[in-house]
Length: 166
Image 1: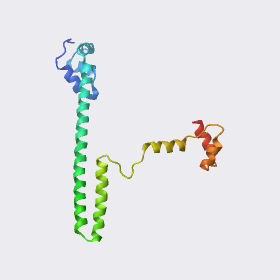
Image 2: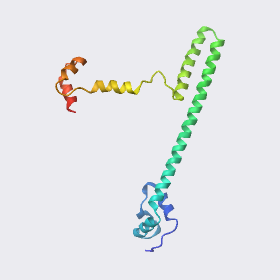
Image 3: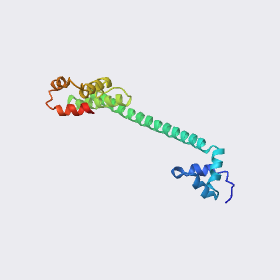
Image 4: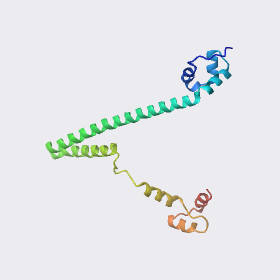
């Protein structure tokens, strides 16, 4: 086998994607795997590949963020248009039709707040949730299990024993 490796071997190696291996490069260029390994070590293929992959990841993340921002912007414009039409309807139509406008206005307002990241009526303080779940699942181990059962009104000591042993 020839011991000369083509100058574009690294580009070929990168282009292999998930099937990337020094053996594949060696077979493609008709050289030994040791030759490819020597060139890869000397030319720092792994470091270069890591830099290329990091740059590609960063570029992909940037595109995803831009796409999400564009989607949010379009949605925001749409819901603001709905809001505007609902306000016009409130001014111009009789009371029976005005209720449709009020519903539209309410939905548009909630969606605009949601897109902007502001709280809606479905949000709850994380600290409150954690505290509630902690009190619900954490029970004293040992002598105070009767008090925990009495507090819950539970008649099943087996469930408390199983929870305490976990």
